[in-house]
Length: 83
Image (cartoon, rainbow, N blue to C red; front, side):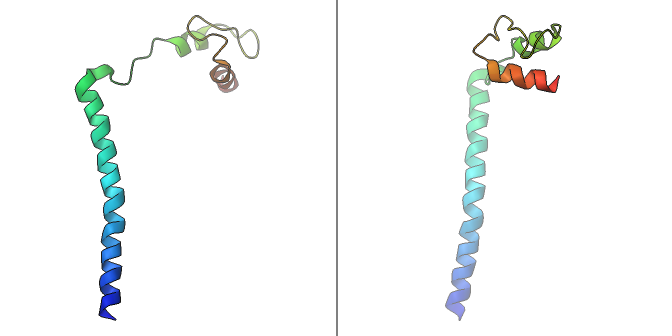
């Protein structure tokens, strides 16, 4: 019976350590990105979506704007639906 309790405790420790280790590795990976590339590690917003949202609503989906053209149909439809 004791061996069963030891196995349960060992499994519980590994079941807790694996998610904790994955979380730590993910956090380290994201932190390294900012350390290597500075404050713009994930890129920066050039205003495509803002420019699209401030133009007058003409049609559905609204007319494309420079930078957010015809190839971005899904984001335009989503933004128009939310608008």
